[in-house]
Image (cartoon, rainbow, N blue to C red):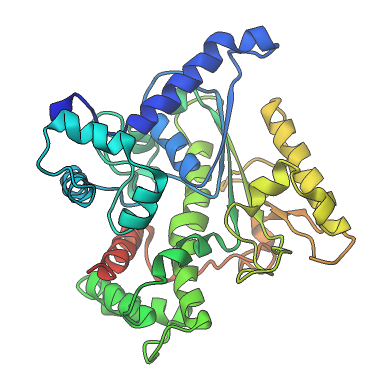
Length: 388
């Protein structure tokens, strides 16, 4: 693609252009170009983090729901290999670079979903410019490294980070065609990564997550336990770590707010009864209130009002600050059939075991934070293990 004049991460360029348009034109709609809030979900939340690699003032407040840049991204070499594979699948391998690009642009959605699907690593990549390097737990634990990684923090001083209790289910569709026994594969990846450091770590994680290394098939329960690991490493823990990073940043005026979404999915399907990935945004946008229980509808309204309060510069609940006894998280919750909104702010001091927030908290007890990035290595190895 470079030979045809294309640079990596064009999707981020499209988003940047949209944000600049808002900055230039929002005043015409009664908005304030000096107080733009970016509200994003899942992969969009990761994109929001990527834009903070730039010192350019694209937005002033950031609401990241169920996603962040704490993940292992595609390398340029992997992207090149994927590009070559895609052009071959689409019958364009022997064409010139410009003709290949035209083939990619003319391909239908069905061409991509049926012929390519999720078999190839396609997505944002570390290009040294828009995404200069990977976001690591290590960098987010150090205020100086955080500001170096995210200079946009100087412009975007307020963030609201959120997660869903079962964000990990977002990966479930990717495992449908896998023939390996997923718990055994995860066990192998854990031991391969951690045994050279400390053999007790993998054993403790396998026990904590109840990974069944003796499983002979992939059942709903064994796969769910694997997804719990992904949930914590790629969603729950990053939400907390980003909140902490902003709260202790070496930039005056920064503040962070953390929330957890626990409302069970009320609709029929394999994940009914779980607080599923992207369900939170449906509540915030009030799209389905008429289909929710009275309690969940109240919860949705409360969540939306809190988001509006944040957008308008207010504090919807106590800000996140690990140095203060009042720090903690807002927990949104309501039963599928109930009439009560059970949402409440949970102080960190009363949630040491994670029972009130319904979040697993044993990662910090099993391994030192300096080793958290190896958890990402485990997941990357696990995902790659299922490829032919």
